[in-house]
Amino acid sequence: MIYHGNRFTFKADVTPEQVEKALESLRNQGRAIPSVKSFVVGRDFGGEYEWGAVFVIADIDGYWDYLTHPSHLHTDRIGLPLVEKFASVDITDDSDPEIGAKIAALHQRRYDEIPDVADLVSDLKEYVGSAAPGQHAD
Image (cartoon, rainbow, N blue to C red):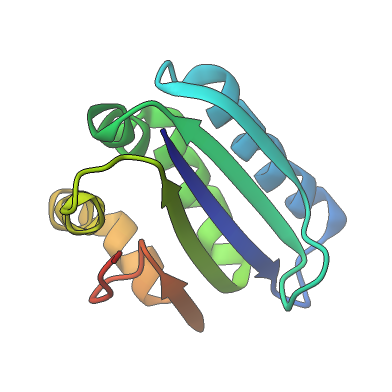
């Protein structure tokens, strides 16, 4: 299993309505993407981020389906412009020693194949973690 997590803080001028629309789009990803086995979207406590989401995905093939699903792309397009800082993390019990590199390669492939998402990511003030361009998921 791969547990793909996102932690984020919205920009100061984002309205409560915009926040709820972005959070509901994340929830919709969990409901709509077949490869997502379970998910949670909610407040992030104990750190420097306000919100978080975790999506449980069975394997690397399902991860690609998750990354390229229309509901995920919709969330990127409406949510990323609202975000001040963003972090991603992947935790897995997959024994493949190359799984981190494979996850990073899927993210890079997505940025290469879907340039508007790459542009949105590059516009973020702060983006760190396994899905950030140029960073390797070890």
